[in-house]
Length: 125
Image (cartoon, rainbow, N blue to C red; front, side):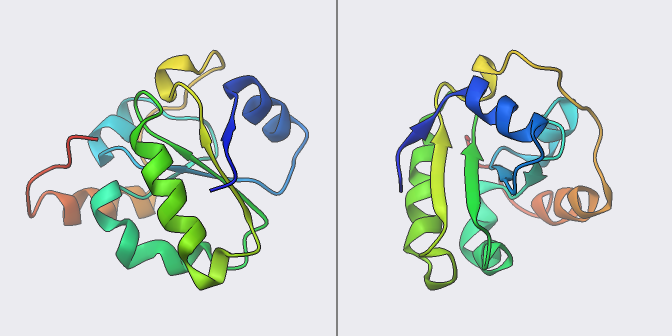
């Protein structure tokens, strides 16, 4: 992991159109209730199976409720060979620190993720 990034910096990068992937590791239900616009939902319990979808990214920011679990997620992502050259950061303070607008609902990929996640226990993150 390359450290933490402030929510304000994430918002600035998104506003500037930076090549940034925001990975929200919360449950599909929490993601549907409100998430950073443009972020993608990869629940923590699925991260090891889906980390290869992040290969080739230049900058990845992980987001969780309060900024603790996203540190673990960023460490896991950074250890993957396909993301070793990426800047991987955790958003300090988590989604509760986000001051910008939140999108709600899910897209098609999040809906399929929700169906998969309903097959077992939800992660506490």
